[in-house]
Image 1 (cartoon, rainbow, N blue to C red):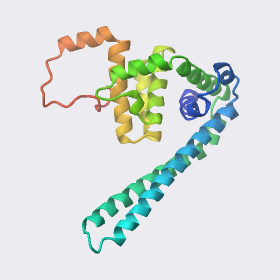
Image 2: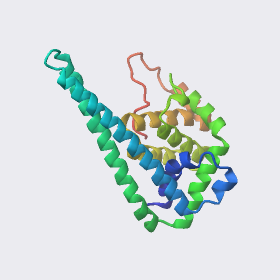
Image 3: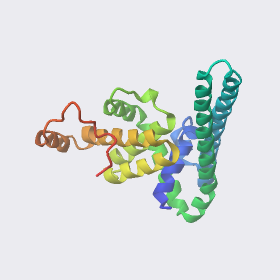
Image 4: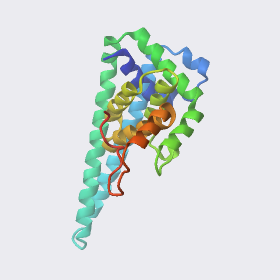
Length: 232
């Protein structure tokens, strides 16, 4: 795995564990500490997913016991079983990701991984208020505070890379989509794609976006938005 790609994952997963530390403390973290924070974060996600799955399975069993008198309970129970299976699969996937981390450490440039992960965490913490305000503007009928934490942190890291570290937006958005596919869901990575594209048009390349709007024909009311379209 490329060092920066692994560093993004470590920063994403370890951010919640290191968020309350002072920037000076974050800067002193070694790679092992970052890996530990990432694994703890994944462990918490696994536990949450399994708890939801267990609850849905229990409720589905209760509905099935009542199904003799209410046919609708059977359909509700099936939906709950499906949710339980999905959450269990999510937990399995997260466990698989956690097991890959030690191998990633061995195959990556440890110094570069540590340096970039710490830079991402520190810059995100330093500029979080400004980043969140811009993301709020880039979202349509939604707010930062309503986002799942993992999706919000993916967006924050992407903005940091584009705005403060000078990484080309094309690369950043593609990387954000790939990491979202690992740690979010299908709706999540499509949403992230759309938000980042709008952020780029509004804050990174506003002149180019304005020129494109003038040149393009008006969009009809029946045309769906391009938030979910693939990155060109």
